[in-house]
Length: 334
Figure 1 (cartoon, rainbow, N blue to C red):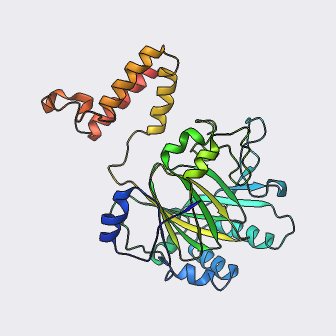
Figure 2 (cartoon, rainbow, N blue to C red):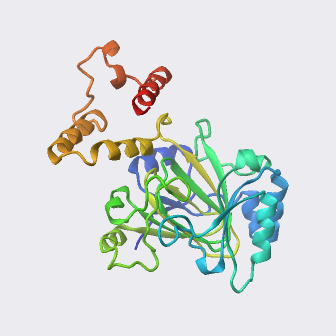
């Protein structure tokens, strides 16, 4: 697989000028080497666990627990009626205790908690994880990921992402957004954690059942990160994450490069599938032209010829306009 471009630490101006506009992933070696939790992790799992415990409160969150035979690959069950793991509530302290006790087991249970909001569950940690490369004046979600040797299936995020490894090594495999057609994605609305995932086992793909996945592999990018390293994943890039050690910790930052969406594009996709997929081909083609024109701006601003007061839904997106559209949708859908 192709490697991901690597850089050393850089300032925000250069990041926003040289990296973000390319829309390509980038690895930053040693970007967060100076974080206290990274330094603690290099002294062992107990050290970083102690720091996390000190920073955490007793607010529970959802953790995933799976039997040893899952081997860290959280996924659907065989008939897609459910999942191969259990969801349990745990505190940071409880999950850390489970992870530390499971180390060295011949057949460990798979344990994982992702997207733990740090400001809510570990507020004392925030001052110790600065990233000057990011503009923290915008809305930014900071999350903690804890687990052992787990495998997060290939998925995408709606936000831009800077993922910083604190403890353990991780292998990340990325696919450009246009590889959707080759990833054999599972159900759109019945998901493990909110985002649709690829159903292909990236390490043992069945190319008989998933022949187009070979093309996706030709476009894949891969990097292995250790403590202190970080990776920038642009919004909508597919990524698969493999934790390579029996204690792993990662902190990530999510943000939007533009105005935060008030209605989810994924929910718009749900509606579009139901409304458009089964129309006759000529009607689908006509609606594709509408979407290209009004949504994707294939021919420029579709309302440029109209005065501002006459643009309606095509005008500037204001809170009032969003609320008005929500009411229209609620009325139509009910």
